[in-house]
Length: 154
Length: 154
Image (cartoon, rainbow over the protein chains, first blue to last red):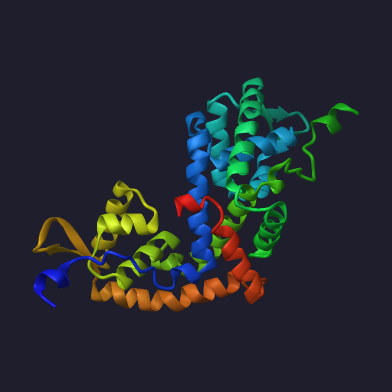
């Protein structure tokens, strides 16, 4: 093998054991999903996590921050920073609860509710594209199998 | 309903349509996986993404940055910052290629190869825990179904 050939980079890239790992495949899928989500909702400055937070507050008006943190799998400090962000954007408000001065109740503002109403069909479209290669049954199987990965953390 | 009852937060949190979304379930799974990965490998300051980069460089010595970027789904600027980080930690080196001065060839250093050898069994253990609730067949089904989500982005 001459010097030049030896120094050239391989043209076909081998991925080692990575493709055999569920963890790696999930990460690839997650990157692809995030790309489509961001192309669809990025102009609203909404990530999948923020969408989930808006949806959970909308469905549970009066929710406390600690409850929200548990529901969306965020730690306490992350949930505070997420709510700060949504509050500064006028989408969520912290309402003082007369019966419990230590913790505030979360609610969407009118602007938050209006934004969520615009986002929902976009998220539905994203979900439809994401699952376009799956039958209804395969989609259900996928959700079922995902639920068996670290069920103790969910 | 009296004032006090009305102001109390709900005790059981409803998740709206979120649990029906493959995108949401994948995100939950990904968070749980990251938690276990980080508990296992966080002390090495290694993320799933960095592990993948080390593995791909190990398997393809002499790889160019642009090839690595494509292989691990990073954009050009992210891959530069990842390699800067690994290089400053003494794990990866950029070797000048005589035949092509415009781009460097990536290689693990001896320290990088030694670290990867320590990480591999830990990643294997993480993967084993992750898939503990799945039979071999279910694991294969899961990988197959994941591959049908945005195949054009993979």
